[in-house]
Amino acid sequence: MLTRRSTLAGITFAGISPVAAAAASGLDLTTPAGKLRAYAQIRSRADGKPSFTVYRGTIYAVPDGQPGVPIFDVEGCSWHRTERIDDTHYKASLVEAGYYLDRATGQPLDIWRNPINGLDCKVQHYRTFQYSTLRPDAIERAAAPAPGMQFRGVVPPANQIGDQVWMQEDLFVRIPNKGVETFADPLEYSGPFVTATSLATWTAKVTDLTSGAGFVPSTMHFQTANSWRPFMRMGTTPGIFSWRMMGVKRPTRDGVPAALQARILKDYPDFFDRL
Image (cartoon, rainbow, N blue to C red; front, side, top):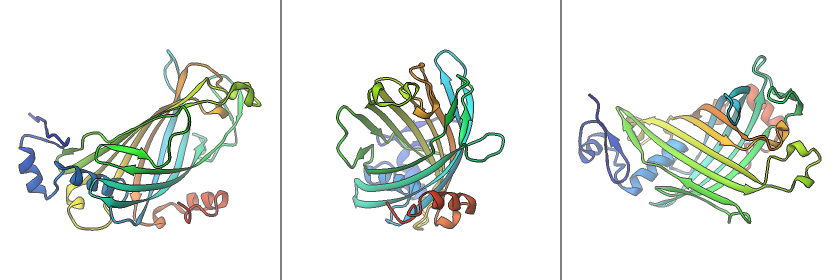
């Protein structure tokens, strides 16, 4: 029977002592510095060079008290750079672009009929930037929070299951919303606050983490529980906008599908040049 045992730093092994497991694998996640370096390697790279993540998934509308409804798919990519400051601090920069897709055709949506309220909506795709400092147990925003903003970034305990290491990143955000009078369409106003919870998990092989290579292959799983997007025209209907995505990290932009690259560069010509 498989049993689990955790160390203070959060590494979990099956049936053997944490110290022996770390020594056997050559990967020491029992120290803050060891855990943080592995986190940087799995999430991006630990040597300051860029990496590229491609992802796909499905997005659900979940009105309170009702089962979730898959409303569209999503496809996108990000590229990021993680640079070591010292053993317990890394600087992280990321730019991302993504598209909401028609579930039948796989093509980016323009006008979309919301199945929850039957309204036609002009879809707004996205490009985002993230700048933060990674610590062994936390993510800190590079910039001071906006007035009234609540932000909490957590790096939970690492886990080793067999020959895989799993790292997680949990972000919890609450931002005061603009007033309803500032929206041309009152149905774009979702309430006094905008909330976002994102739960990301990456996994990589122990042998890759201990190989000495600069790039460590990894895969990602990502879930969210967020306020409605304004373009959905849900108004103050209680509920959440929930993502489920899977992705893979690549060492160069050649790993980004050509069609996705072309679409992103058409919309954002400087996408791969600007962090």
